[in-house]
Amino acid sequence: MKKRSSPSHGDRRGIAALEFALIVPVLLLMLGGVADFGLLMVGKGQLANGVAQGVQYALLKGPSVVGATPTVQSVVKSAAGLSGVKPAVTVTVTGPACYCVSSTYPATLTAPPSAMTASHTCTGSCTFPAAAPGAFVIINASYTYSPLMPFYSKLANTTVSETATVRMQ
Image (cartoon, rainbow, N blue to C red; front, side):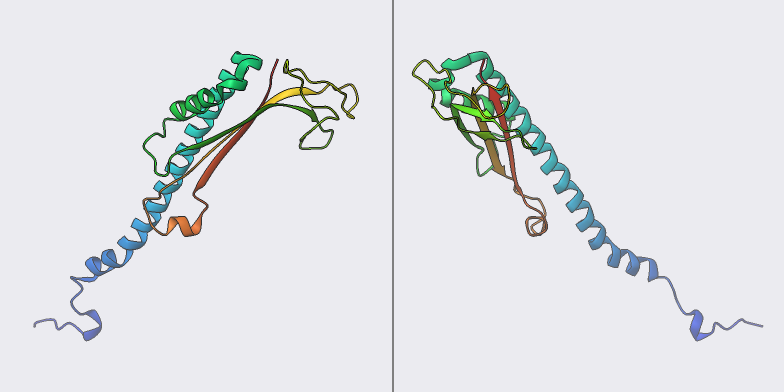
């Protein structure tokens, strides 16, 4: 006798293909988001490396870094290795300027009663006990990451920035 299949056990040949078609877009969106996050973090690391190289250059240059602001900017841009990104990396260099370190956490820089003299030395005194004012250079770099997945810029901030402050010796 021939077995008859009941309607509840119908033809199931296309079920796996249908399930695959339904789940693949979700998996691809997740994979794209993970890739964008990873590339954003790589870019942040490269930008941090560029700022660190700029700080090292400013520290080695010493007080004569005043006229070398374009050089510091080019050192940061070339060390970051992000020359192909659009929009390009923007770098601002402030100083050297005379500041006092505050006693609050996190420590902030405040201007002392007197500014820097022509010889790039700080004069005056700070209110923080046993602290003398110092000449500081502040390097700030930023760029905007272009995500692979268009929705990623709506979910996360794609502007990456790094700031470093170096006290001149």
